[in-house]
Amino acid sequence: MSKTWFVTGTDTGVGKTAVCCALLEAAAAAGLATAAVKPVAAGCDDRGRNEDALQLMACMSAQLDYEQVNPVALKAAIAPHIAAREEGRRLSVSRLAGLCRGVMSTASDFVLIEGAGGWRVPVGSRETLADLARELQVGVILVVGMRLGCINHALLTAEAIQRDGLQLAGWVANQSDSRMANHQENLDTLRNLLPAPLLGDVPRLSPFDPVEASSYLDIKGLQIE
Image 1 (cartoon, rainbow, N blue to C red):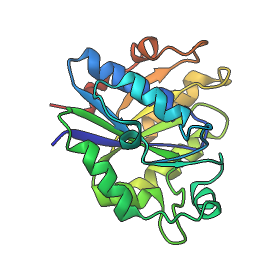
Image 2: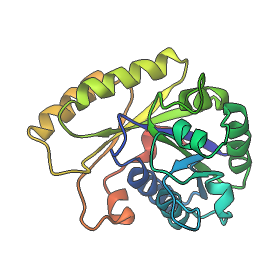
Image 3: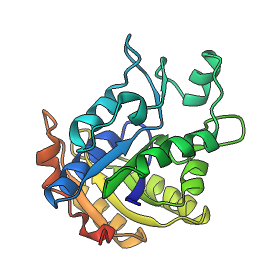
């Protein structure tokens, strides 16, 4: 079976999809067959397509149908469990895990499962996306949005991941907004305190180019081989 990681963030809007795309490009440059799945996406166009899922499809080598990459596409760009309730749909971790395993079983060497928002985003009244990562028993990659407050958010998220019995396999510093004050000092603090290797420090790119972003990453820390 392919090597798989669950990608989460310190918050929403920290650039998880951008980092996923860069990771896919880095893996492809290393000669790996790649695939990705965004099991739940909230915020879709009139065709029921989510922009994040489409970006993942553009950067991975596997030829999968949209419904395989984004099996649960919700219309409103709000919390997934609320969007699902408004559409009369019920989300469950067991079903989402089965859908993810379908992509994990493809002939791919490197698979990413992109979450929604942060680690504890609910998918129902009792379950969160953290439960999905636990169900699949995969390593976790944390995207840290480099902005004021990121140290606290990153450390709390790392603690939650470890408390849930999962490995924080690596983390990526991502500058989705203008460069934060004392960027290097914050980066050094996180590097010293987070219990996982730094995979890269991705600057703000305008326009964003996943191939260029991949040049700031080193995926050897994921111990793929």
